[in-house]
Image (cartoon, rainbow, N blue to C red):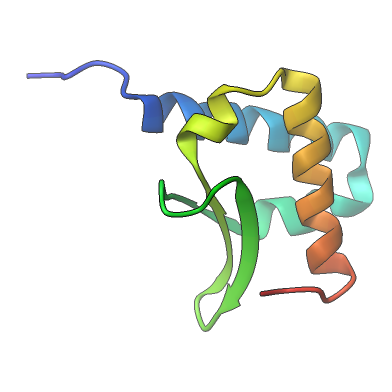
Length: 90
């Protein structure tokens, strides 16, 4: 039985779409974007990146993601990429 699309799945899809759009607009950052491992977590308020032994995690609150327009979500994704590029990881 398929429970349908949950807010977590919809938010993940929006993050993936925003990543694809950012990669098209900023090809230099495409390599960083493809390395993100997505983790939905209501424990975070917004979105953030952190380095682990397994790679770079992009942790996001599904409610936060769903409340953003596509353009703003793209800007937030670019902000998170810059944390990685500039070495500002939590």
